[in-house]
Amino acid sequence: MKCFLNNYCAMTQFKEITMRRIEGILCILLFVAADAAAQQPEPGAWYLSPSPTGVSVDARFVVETNATGTALQWAPFGKTPVSWGPIAMRQDGSIEFHSAGDPPLQCTLRRTGEGTYAGTCRSRGEIERKATMGRNQANGLDLPVSDTDFRILAKARQILSGPSVWYRRDTRSCENSAKQNSWSLFCALYQASFDETGDYVHLRPAMEEVRAALAEITQYRSFGHPLMDYNNLESTTYADIKTIFEVAKKRLETRTACTESRDSNWSVNEGPASPTPGSFTSSKGWGEGLSFFAAQKRYRLVEVLGPMADHARVPDEWLAASSEVARRTWKQDRLDGLDVKGTLPNGNHWRYFCLCGESWRYYDVPTEAAAFFDHVIDGAYSRDGHR
Image (cartoon, rainbow, N blue to C red; front, side, top):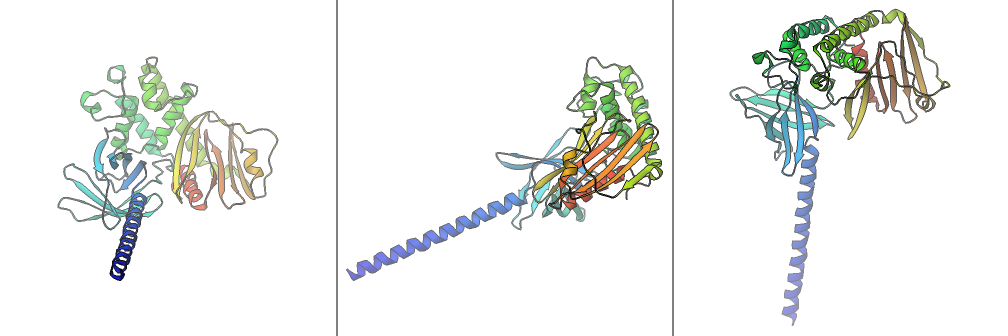
């Protein structure tokens, strides 16, 4: 009997120890799985620097998730996307991906923050190069207007020289445009950018003002991809395309004049601002958005391009909710400008900027995001370039 009890107790203890080990292994596996999920990049657009093609602009990628895991797609503007295959997790917690091109490129990166990775990339027979991958990419919104923008417009108009070379079925893939001498509005601007600068920057002022010109001409009609969709409309004529170039040039000229005279036309009021009577009216226009990722949250900077003489007001509720407000106003001929910054009781920030047919706004964002957005806004309207 005693022997039986001893054997029973031993078996019970063995089962308990085994169950604890199984539970421990499951916990470890769950922790590893959670850590792997945390290391994997979130779906959406990412930018790898330096570009694997060697151009100065960062390479654009799209991360996608499916039933088998996370995959990477090389998706530069103007080209047909190319799959780079799965993003693999290494035992040390870093991620690894590679291209199947010639030469193939292999990258090993580790997450360094919210929306950022750092590591190395290497082609066959080459030494490792430092590389970064991130989501907080201005992609041209922070560029001031320059002579380059006027040259790009002139070159695009030269490329799209007449109805015989105008391509009416745009897909935003421009690989065959030069070979066939057949150009959509987008591909003409895309090629002109490469001809003048050696790369393509999607949101540089020339591209933005073409989209704004298109919005004016169509009375702010909504499009998914404005340049492609308008180009492909049956009702669009070659004369309409020429008009877009003309209006875009005038808009660039006005923005240049605003930028060059801004220092003498701003007046500053650093005192607290109170809500003014009336409701907030938003300018008509065509909009872009820029995201900043921090602390597992996405914050947005919204840019709207509308009529050059338009002047909107800061929402009253923004002013009423603020603990601190600083205001600047601008005036030149028929054009108005406004730049108001505010701090909320929670320590977050907002800004409303409107000048020369362009308005920018962000609300309730942390200091890190506000600094990034301010860099974009101030850079776009800096006479001397980036500050």
